[in-house]
Length: 197
Image (tube, rainbow, N blue to C red):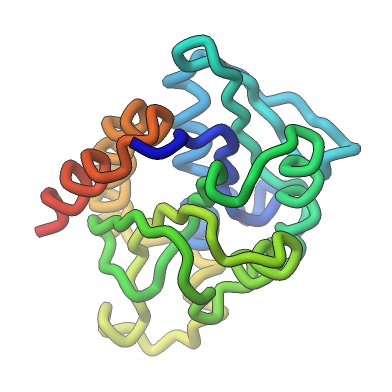
């Protein structure tokens, strides 16, 4: 088993007007993970993030939600990684994914950013794509039969059926947290990808 995740970064946009939008799916899961670790968020301005500190098997675990807009997510990610002296391989980024339908989720390490501005910025700041990503499906306007442009779509709230499917995904992601923190990525993938239908 490889080393487990020590820093979890949920991606989203700050502010009440963005709270329920598809682009904030990463924040939704970060909130779930903080609850699971009995950790609460407090603002750490020097990290440009809301930070929750928990523990797993004696190890400190950091969960963060950047206070910057999505395209500047690297600012918080870089500050946290440097402060806690972590490698990209110990970081898990939670983000919305257009290429997966609501109700689907996938874990992967490395790869491109597929046009996701938050991932692009983190990759640039880390000077490496080798961090873990948990991709939360939100669908694409084309696959969901909507006439919206992508930019408007990600900044809108999901419809009720999509939200229910995403909630189900968050519940399934909740169940793989221990495996991710223990470094058992194989088990986490089998558990999560097995339920993708």
